[in-house]
Length: 112
View 1 (tube, one colour):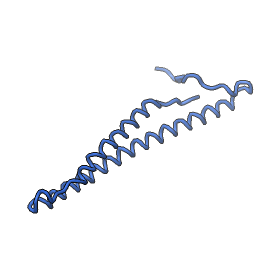
View 2 (cartoon, rainbow, N blue to C red; view 1 turned 60 degrees about the horizontal axis):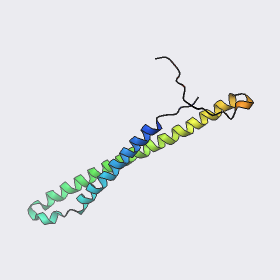
View 3 (cartoon, rainbow, N blue to C red; view 1 turned 180 degrees about the horizontal axis):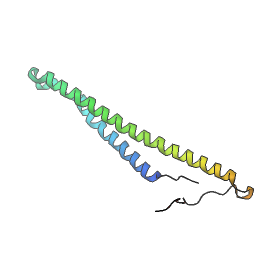
View 4 (cartoon, rainbow, N blue to C red; view 1 turned 60 degrees about the vertical axis):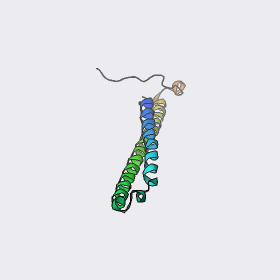
């Protein structure tokens, strides 16, 4: 038995989350570099609060996207290890001459 999970789909999702994370880094840096003192004393406090709030929010979203990418990478690894363990366990049940047989294609079990 081999699991052969949706590796390509998981990899695409991981890449998409990584790109989201990287895409949020630019706006976060822009918010951090903005100078609210240029707006004058009347709005400086409000502008500073606005920039700080949005910088923290973008940072949280960036970290969340990065976390999703990391989780998908770990899932891919876990499936790979499980798949390899499954193959080894099944090979141990085969006749001695067939123990080096590797699965070629996944077999679907069950009906429609």
